[in-house]
Length: 94
Image 1 (cartoon, rainbow, N blue to C red):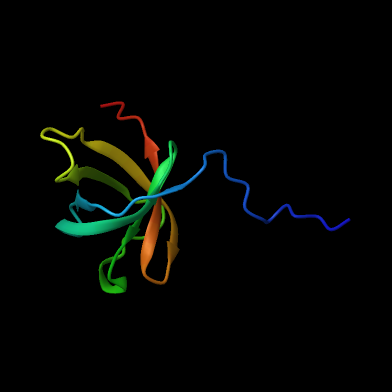
Image 2: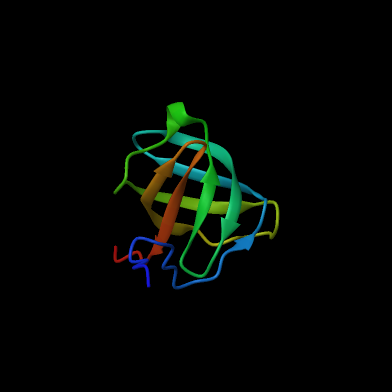
């Protein structure tokens, strides 16, 4: 039997969700992007490759247009690929 240790080992099921999402960080400023999918553990944002922050960058973000006062979430870039970034939600200890 083949060892699939490097295979997809997600703890949370992803749901396809396309919505506008505002992100901000000192290195990239504030920008509007779109989500590709979301889970209880994080989300994937579709971004222009020129603006992609490196793995480990902590961003703040907020869903736009789906609710009046969406919460601001803190996220860490955990994956970079052509066309976007994977982020995991982290708790804001500050």
